[in-house]
Image 1 (cartoon, one colour):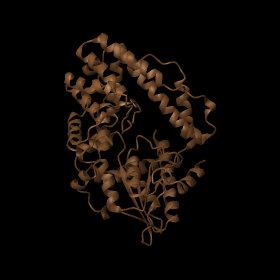
Image 2 (cartoon, rainbow, N blue to C red):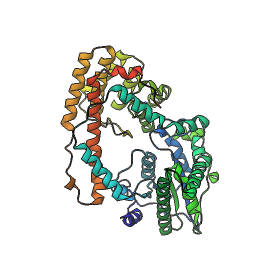
Image 3 (tube, one colour):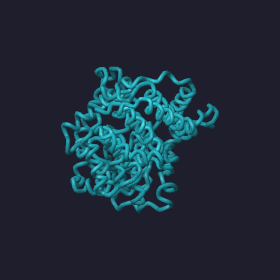
Length: 449
C-alpha cells in the first residue's frame, strides 16, 4: 500500500482534472539539474495568529520569486487524488490556490500509513455510534481551550523573539535547530519519544524519495516543496547527496519585503484569522483569550478593501459581542439569522466545529447574547431551537461495510467521519450551553497547568 502511494504521487497531480481545468503545466526550465526549494511553513491555526512575522502572503511571495514549474505539498497522494487537504496544513491550500492561478501542477509528496488512517476513521465512526456522554460544563470547555492555547506556547515564544521575521527564522535557524536536536536524540536512541522520532525520520525519507522520483521524471524542473518547517532541514539533508538535484539554499532567494507581503494578501487570509481567533478551538470557550488587537486589525483590513458579506458581518458581530456592544451585535445578527441563502464560511476551522451556514451560527450567537444580557429563559429557548435545527442535518453514522477497501476508508471514510463528528461536537457544545449560561466561560476557571 505504501508503494502504491508513491506511484500515485507521480501520476496524479491535483488538478489537472479539478483545479487546472485541463491546462498543461509550464515547460520545465532550462537548468541542467532539477532545482528543489523547500519552503518551511507554519501550520494552522497559528499561521493565522502570527502577523506580521509570518502570513500566508509570505508563501505566495517566495513562490513568485522562485517561479517553480511544479509544486509539492504536505498531503498524501491518495488524499490528493480526491482533493482532500488536511485542515491543519493550511499552507497546502494556499499553494493549491496559487498554483491554480499560475496553471502549475501540484503534487502530494507526503507519506502516510494508509492502514493507520483507515483505522483512525473506523475508530472515529465506531465511537460516534456510542451514546453521547454527559455534556461538559462550560468551565471544563474553557479549560480545554486554555490547554489548547498552552500547547502552542513554543510557537508563541518563538513569535515573541522574532515578531517581524518569523518566516525567515523558520526557514533558517528555526528549522535547523529543531532538525539537529531531533537527529541527536534519535542518534542516542533513548527516551519516550524515540519511536515517534524514528517514524518521523522514516516519513521524511519517503518524502525525499518521492521528491527525487518526481524531479527525475522532469530533469530540468524547478520544484517548490511547501511543508511544515520542521521537515525543511531533514529533507535538505536527505536530498543533498543526489548529484542530479540542486537544493536551493534559502540565502539564494530574494528577500521578502513587507510591501510584497501586503500586496499578496487575499481576503480569505483575514477570514481565516478571524475565524480561528473567534470561533476556533483556542478561544471560542475562552473569550478572554481572544487576540482582540489582531481581530480589530483584520476587520479593519476587510473594511478598507470593501469586503462585505454574510460571513464578514457575522465575524464583526462576534467581535462586538466581545466588546459587550450587545445592541450593535444583535442588529447585525438578526438579519443573518433569518437569511435563507445557505451560505457557509470560506475558511474551514482546524478543529472542525461550527462548519455550518452563517445563518445557523448567527442564531447560536443570538442565544449567547440573551445569556450575556441576563435573559436565561430566552437563551435556552434559542439554544434548543438551534439544537433542533442541528438534529435535522446530522447524518447517520455509516456502517462498517459502507467502504469497500482501505483507499475508500481513507477518502470516503474521512468525509463521513468529519460530517458526523462536526455535528456531534456542535451538539455537545449546545447541550453545554443549555445546561449553564454561556457567561460562565467569561468568568474564568481553574488555572491550567
